[in-house]
Amino acid sequence: MTAADLRLLVPEIVLIAAAVTIYLGGAFSTARRAWSWIAGGALLLAAAALWMQNPSTPEILGATAGLSSSAGNTAGQASSGTLHFQDGGSLGCDALARYVQWLALAAGALLVSLASRPLRFDGTPEYVGSLLLTVAGLMLVAAAEDIVLLFVALELISIPTYVLLYLGRGDAESQESAAKYFFLGVLASAILLYGFSFLYGATGSTALSEVRAALDGTETLPPGFAVFARLAMALVFAGLCFKVAAVPFHFYAPDVYQGTTHANAALLSVVPKAAGFVAMARILVAAMPGMEPYCWAVVLAVAVLTMTFGNVMALWQDDFRRLLAYSSIAQTGYMLLALAVGLAARDAPGAWNGIVALWFYLATYAAATIGAFATMEYLGRPERRLDSVDDLAGLGRTRPAAAAVMAVCMFSLTGVPPLAGFWGKLLVFGGALNVDTSGTAGWWFTAAAIVGVLNAAVAAAYYLRIVAVMYFRIPLATPSARGGRGAWTSAVVCALLVVGIGIYPGPLMRAGNFGAEPLTRAGHFSAQCVRSGGTGVSPVLDEARARCPCHPTKKKPPPPQPAPQLGMAATKKVPAPNAYHLRRALVLSRIRVTTSCHIILK
Image 1 (cartoon, rainbow, N blue to C red):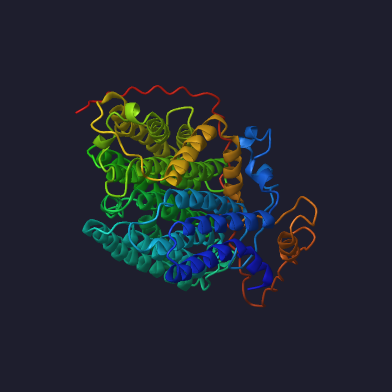
Image 2 (cartoon, rainbow, N blue to C red; image 1 turned 90 degrees about the horizontal axis):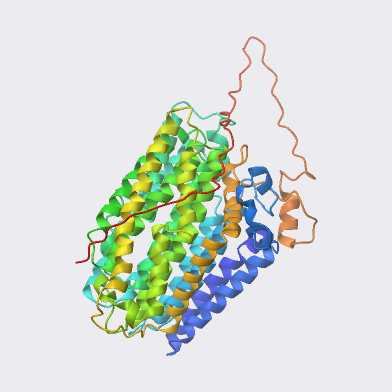
């Protein structure tokens, strides 16, 4: 690992160092409220380090004026962003890594603020430090270009999560949920590691770029080794399905969500899910070419089962966290549908739509979910939590501001315009409808999109039921609202993000465009190096640009062609599979959605 690689790890090093400092400081100090401030400062330092590595982030994220119209940019237009990739290295710094790293820091800040109230017993330093480690793990997952580093990064999320679940509550139900998540998490990690071992055995390398080269025809696999690659795909997908709580690996989620705190439920619904989808995209979409005919069918079937099961089961739930656990399962199905689109239409405009929809939907889902859990945390008090949906009865009269924030989050999860969730569902279902209809794949995706729309209508019943309980039920009691100012700050910020993204979705869509570019470029495992802009913008990028083999100033010589031997036929090289040639995806200019829901109050 070179000095440039270490500089790329500065944000993660800052977070890990802060976590270790909090762990050690908690053993010698009785202060309980200072640790959240230290964690917040560490997140700010990590954000500053990430910004210094790439000062042109506003241009990439579309934060400047006039970029909202770029949501429909093509792959060629998106490639003008500041990107970097080290071919064969263990660390990457492409647009996808940057997008997920900024998302991780934002989610980490919201979660630290949400959990800023000290625990009732000793363990606050360990809780805050473990929270920082999960954020650092998600950032490492985004930058991992090697399956060993990817597995270590995933475990850097899982192991602190076990500690967080154990420290969340001190009752027997909490300990049971923590133990259940621990044993099932170990099983999922074993399955994932077993899949990685088959992938290494089939390709002979742990670097994802070399894995891709071995599977796309540029290197010859030994006879029969393609079977091991397919087995590796199945095992890796199964292990990652546990991270994202997809059917049939979802069974831990309802019990674990119900048995923990609102802050831990918010963490479980965002950080492991984001890490799982990033790992799926890195491995299934970008690193395993030629496996798409097997991948997209499996992912599509799991997506339909997941969204249907989650929505149907959520209709019967009265516990708020258990209801949002099934909601999280259903939301996973929508994101898997977007991933299936990217697999089925790889290197085509349809794939671009699917991957962009995945990253956009992930961000909007995280904002709405954290906002809902933060509101519940704010309304409760240490000695009495709000657990049931009926506890919110009459909240519109007793706590109108909190009811408004909760309603905004529920409407966004439903997909009501003009909130952020509407654009997320529009991108997902629109991408499914734009898959090539000349073959059988198009019909399958059209049917899946119809099932998804029907599931969204079913989901509106239990989301709007919460809104109806708040505004049309007689209040049973006035919530104490002693959950802390940090929880209320997180709730308000999430509500503002949901409304702001819904009104002005262009910047986040452009960020999703750049995040999708490394996975949809033909001929590269990841994004190309910076081809535009002068030097001196960032020392890290300048050094990486000088070393990158795909930079125009450093041409890579063609590999020598061996001469055919006498008496033997020349070996014919099998070309890589051609990309799909599809027409551009239709621009959806205006869609009117009319939803009629009949809510029966108990």
